[in-house]
Image (cartoon, rainbow, N blue to C red; front, side, top):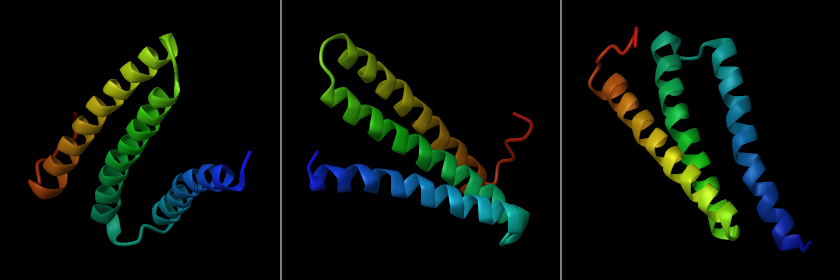
Length: 102
């Protein structure tokens, strides 16, 4: 495995790990109060589902045959989940519609 491929794979892991550490610290110390925690939660759900969609699309492009179809279907389902999370975040943060209890 070349150094370029190793750096690419490593960089793909740095993002979710650093976001996870930042979120854990934010939840532990409650920076910004309860409203900020909820906003960060909604935005993180939208961003992480978008990240999963991109990873599934890349896996679908690299796969062949039946695996490609499976990854494509996962990509479509992840994209639908991303759209739902973005709508949820917009309703909660921008429009101020209380979504609890769902």
